[in-house]
Length: 339
Ligand code: SF4
Image (cartoon, rainbow, N blue to C red; front, side, top):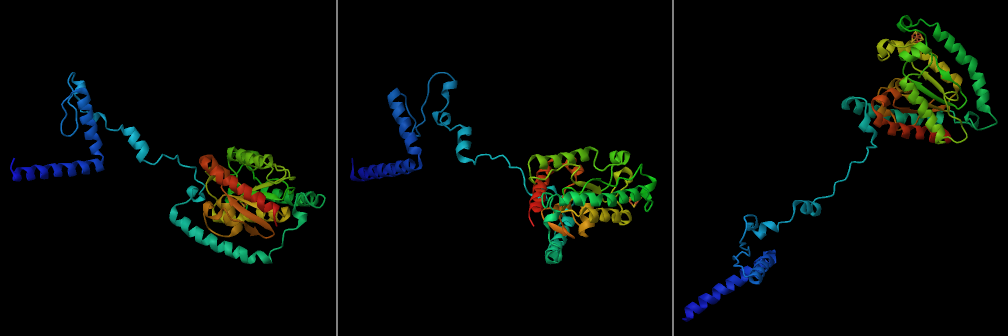
């Protein structure tokens, strides 16, 4: 062999060695080596890429390179992040009752209101022990007794009232139910069909839900030593008469009827007021907004604390809102127990 041929053969061998080293570094070298070794063991001719030529059935004619491809499942299990089921949302904004744009405005206004309420906090009368149901040897019970004739008087006036057009469509007025015994007042929107027939607020499906909410607060001892039931809290509405077809209250109806509610609240001297829905909140807080924008804060109404939560009728339509409502009821209890 001439020197030129030897140099060329050495050059080819060196190039081949470098190629194999590169492929080994990339991982294909092991495959090639394994294919060659297997071919040697089994006496089967091997291709230069390491694939083995099988003899026999059509099924066995498949290239081992293909048959060795990792199963898609195992590749996915290694390379993809594990699937995490979504956790329940605790964001109250997820349950907004209004379109986004008005909601944003409401948040701005309610923030302003919070600031106003905070500024006024020092001017408001502080909570006193005699407004707490468990304090001072039944002072709350005495307050309930004193409030009773006022509540009866308001009820009688409402039943005879003709100040707005709802008197022509109602079966009867629905003044309120309960007592000042616990110092907690729930204020809703207006009577529905069941309430209109029975003359008592919150007795339909939404009312049953409110009763269960109060019972749950009692069962969980959210306010220890204070019995919570429809008898120990007071339940009333902004309107005392049912709007036809359960439509929303009209501004002039709220203006005509709200003095009854205000007189009830003055007699009850609540420690805390829970507004159920936007109409009660808008009246007592004197602002426009959505429930989702107003809830989650503690306001003051004269000498009482005030919180806002969803109306039970909304919970019937949107059961997922029960979670934020339970949060609100816990806030109610916490505020009740602190000055
Ligand atoms: S809704 Fe109120 S103001 Fe109107 S008739 Fe009834 S009690 Fe009177």
